[in-house]
Image 1 (tube, rainbow, N blue to C red):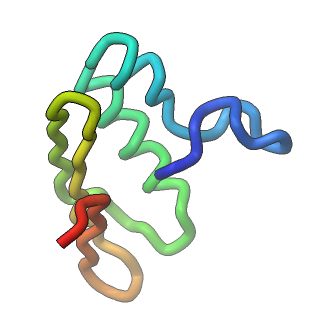
Image 2 (image 1 turned 135 degrees about the vertical axis):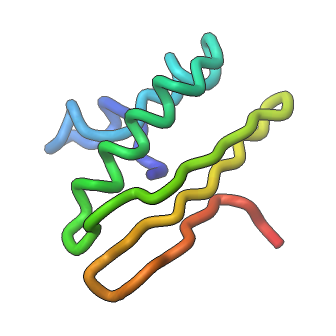
Length: 80
């Protein structure tokens, strides 16, 4: 979830388009769609059950609940 699109030299088309969907113009639906697509590519992920996000100034927070072959997992970029 932290790789920018175009950042990985061997996977130029992979990654999240955060510059265009979060920082240039905040487009939550575009960011969520890209995040869900990225998460579904991970081996063992069966479903993204929910995805929430918010942006306060220059801070983006998100949380995803995913169902994997090992059970349900909550993924978040927020710090406790």
